[in-house]
Image 1 (tube, rainbow, N blue to C red):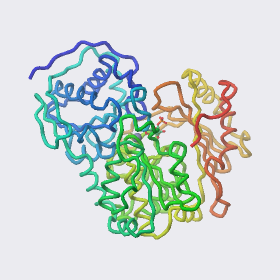
Image 2: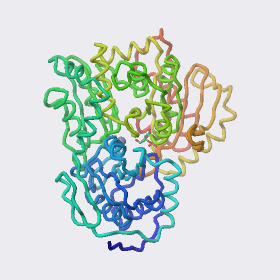
Image 3: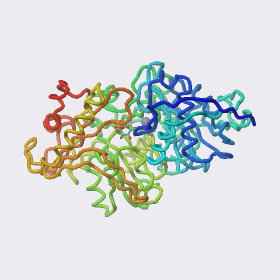
Image 4: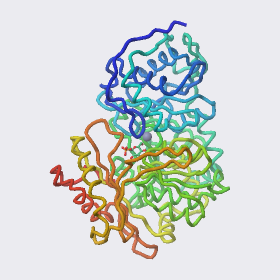
Length: 544
Ligand code: G1P
Ligand code: ZN
């Protein structure tokens, strides 16, 4: 085999963030930029000679070009086979499942998740290891170090691959196996959920559902599973065709970017359940009639009812949530008598716990939930879980949430995102607040008193690795909590996220939205960190 070594120079901005490397398309298109990063992964992740890898993306602009380059670098590094979704498409959870199903050595996911697509949008690369989970921090840091010293990458000539044609094609030294991206994933969902009961619900002629794929990767998955296998009426899935620029939509399932779904769920003629997923299919949003289900509540509720769903009938070994996620699920875990782990933001931190069998259910406040069936979060899975619960309990979505609040109390939650153009200013705000944490205890804040404040450090209970600086936490004596951290997925400037949580007892009045109930806490949090004073910005750029 003819392997060519191409000389290159390092780039200084290839440190993977919360979920892989994300940059503007224009940056990725610079000569050698993608090649350098891929080669750095091959160098840092081990020997892939003779191995099988999975590859696919969310279909965003530049997906096909990036795949071609990946094929030739994989071949140059001795990879024997690449299993790729038809047309280069694989949702993030489907890719995770495929890696595990095939015993592949890992996989490359070409996605910038919910970030906008198109020539002026974002592109991204995630690397999953053999367990189907995102590269752990030690590996992403090794990739970054490698990217700073790389001097050459290896390519081999591979023939053109027809990504529309299922089956194995020999492309020079590389075997490329094109698979139906949906089939294995759909089969897995049939094992986990009671399709018969869901079919009876969706086909009863009364239950009205809408799933918005936001012109991103989940369209074909949702049409196959919801409409074909579960009998939902044609047209239940909207924006079902993946487009390279997502049709100009922002493929992020949240009440702001998918406000049209929330609107469809209120007033006369409202539906019974609306849901959406993001660009690469790992996030989910669930809306009931006049009820936006907060992700923290969703996680708590799935935990509470897990035994009513076939795949979890034996109960959960444990539960994990990311630190900023509301503590609603902690109360459920306590009631179930199972452990609840608190991890840093980013799905990769759940993977060791999942691999060790310590947890079966995980979730993040950022509209991500999943279980031990994969090593990534899974949007459609969450929708099917909710459908299964509605089908077996006979309760509407809003009723399930209210029942939960009456039993456990409500953790009202919101996230304020402050966009700060100058990253150094944002870092300074965080450092300033961190320096004042020790003096906060006992101080009055938003009508309560600070009981404790710290910077979150996580020690992985499985491998003992320590991740420091994972967010600043302020706890109040009325059960409220503030969390501050800098986003690790943006491609320009800095986004300082403030997570607000306020506890309302089971007997309290539970009316109001999360953002409404935490508004006062949010203003106090911004002042505490001196954001308006140091930036001149008076209000967050986004509230979710
Ligand atoms: C965001 C979310 C985080 C999620 C990640 C990838 O990261 O906050 O929970 O895992 O996207 O979907 P952030 O931008 O906050 O670093
Ligand atoms: Zn995503």
